[in-house]
Image 1 (tube, rainbow, N blue to C red):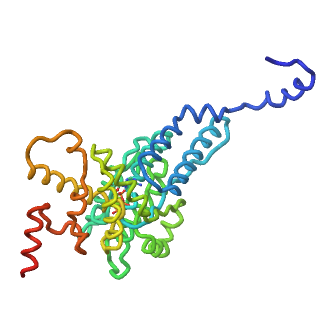
Image 2 (cartoon, rainbow, N blue to C red):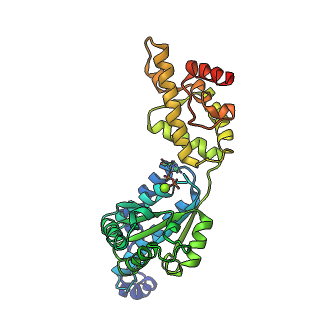
Image 3 (spheres, rainbow, N blue to C red):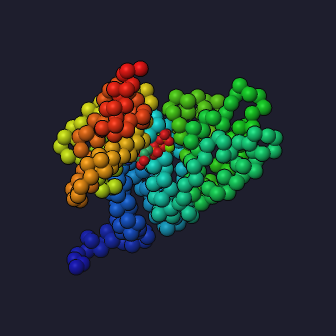
Length: 327
Ligand SMILES: Nc1ncnc2c1ncn2[C@@H]1O[C@H](COP(=O)(O)OP(=O)(O)OP(=O)(O)O)[C@@H](O)[C@H]1O
Ligand SMILES: [Mg+2]
């Protein structure tokens, strides 16, 4: 307990005047670590993005504590831009971000509304304002995620209605920032140009987060994760086949990171199912769960083709291919 020596009594005095806040306790109460751990487990890679989320969370925690001790705190503005190639996790992270901001008391509802130009901009005079208003209304209390935001701005068309939507968005980002977070998403270079021509957005977006392409290892880990979530698994051979698949697929023009992995998995599941049905007989759980190497190698990608091109399973696929060659 307390040592009653004169020194410590002298030291204790100034501290007693100060009202202390327990950051550790606030941190524990917020269950922040659990949420960040979950984020870490469920999303492969993305370490700069995860670090950023952790920083924002700390900022909100500290800002709440500052309020508690009577320091006037301006509510941090959290409009953001997410840039990166397709399938790098922008929409997924935005959804997580909305939940975390809600959990930390920053957002009232914490839902995500995804909108593109077509949702905001009308075709005729007078159509844009009600459309944009409707989307803004839907998004209040949560996150408005504007995908490919640069399509709102079409300088080549002088009387483009996009401008009307832009002005309404800017106004909401300013006046309703207590109840709305706007995330603008898209390709890095196009977004940079967009910000250059729209300084209103540039000055309102304080946080720019870029999503790198996944490495081959990360894509493989994403596949394992997605399979596990759906109660499927590779065996050693199919795992190796999938790495080879990725090596080929990543070099193709339409490659879309984790989205392509998800699509590849959907097709492997189709091939597995058709293999099992064709074989007939009885199967155990193990066979229902396992993606075999043939299920991976049935992809057109191994023949220099594009994934998703007509392929009809192992047996009929061979037939179709030999027919194709005859032509
Ligand atoms: N790091 C990751 N770990 C696990 N799954 C991921 C990861 N990143 C993305 N995914 C999954 O990949 C798919 C595509 O991700 P998402 O839609 O978030 O990408 P995006 O960047 O918004 O793509 P787009 O630009 O095409 O809209 C989703 O099914 C998502 O769950
Ligand atoms: Mg997206």
